[in-house]
Image (cartoon, rainbow, N blue to C red; front, side):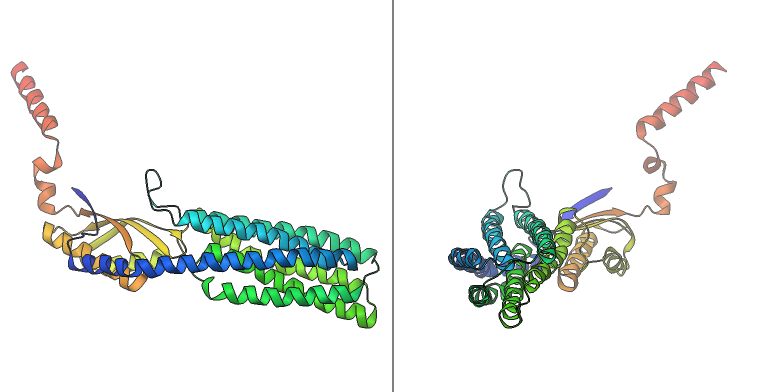
Length: 343
């Protein structure tokens, strides 16, 4: 007989875990609001700078500065998407969204990564054309625009850096700003080379460097987003390691099914079917609590569903009532009786 049991809310450990979640709920909500506020500040700064840099790019005829302006425009759109996805992700689970809406942030991260690759391809294509036929460039407006961009993007980096590790959606926004900083540095170096040495090709070379850095920064973001959306087991939780943790319990005989996936970067879910030694209901409940406690404390998996199936004993295999369906058994006896009467 199979018994599917989730964490018992009446157990002491479960009550302690529930209380911890309640205690942490308010700070987590406040942290989310702070992240949204930081994103809004970054969007405002980038919008103001976009108008200024566009004017300087048109004045100086600089490809790298114009490419950076286009990059800023897509960044503002990507950050707006990140802001919206962050708001959607905080909506509670309801109706068909039984896991909530946290995957919205993963979708936004994937969209940001694809957008970064598209930007890199466009900038790289234009830069290759400029390398073949450099154009006259005004270095001073270019230098001023690059310097302002570096200053503003450095402020944006400081706003997002410390909060980008635990949120993949926010990390996508952070990588956009990193690409902006790299772009500003490249444009600044190109402006200095053009001003001091009149190397016009430096502008196109800076654009090509920005394209490469932008594309490379997007690859890990796309890979991680796809891994979550495809529901691969997180690299931090190898199935072999979790299966070994199950088998470390003497009562566990076999791990028949094990599924591990991530809803978000910090929300890992586990479902497992275990074959265990014959035991009483109380022993089974104790085993479930011990397994869930170990998964929570050692592996950081707090959402688990366990199905336990008792290993059939030898006595059970010898007992006819446990090896045959009653209807089939009586039918066989009836057939045997009729054959005996006919003979």
